[in-house]
Image (cartoon, rainbow, N blue to C red; front, side, top):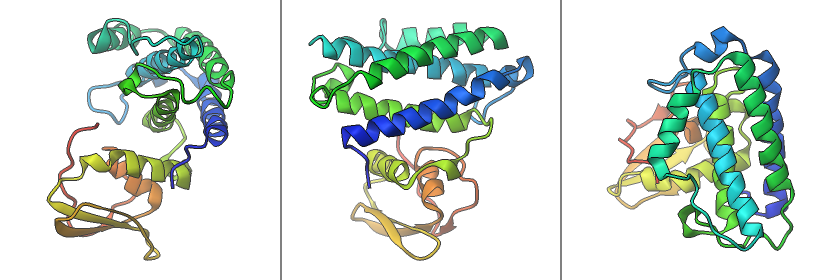
Length: 231
């Protein structure tokens, strides 16, 4: 279910980046100050995070091409959080310019990779460049919906939804055997070996729930288990 073939991932990233970029001209002061669906975060917080994580992962690509590994964020998580807090107060024109410039760098970084580059080692999770590319795919798709400016969970592809389910399966409690089923009865995902729990919904809504978001429609089936932390 997961798109891990580099050429397909590059196409998915390009489409997601285009979708995000298309939102920038419509940003207003009211829009950037409004609350996002994420507790305690305005849209400005989400936009600042997208800018920061996009550039952070893009530099994993730039340095990997040179045969170098570098930390995702200079200063680690504290520096990342501080940058979001400092950046979320910017005006709509400042956000538009900053995100446009960031997207230029992000798009150029991922587009520059050749077929042999994706196995290069990176500092992100002590993995390879493909892991960093998949991380940007998750951040891009999930947080574009978090902006609540048009794109929705229903826009997620089957490939991306499947990737989210696989990546976040570690959030499922170890004492639960979770089976996720689409509304037409197709079992799309199973994980664990404990008490059987069956949950029904659209594939994107199931992925959204596992990602800690509110699905666009209530999920059916058994009571939802309490999920663990993000990996």
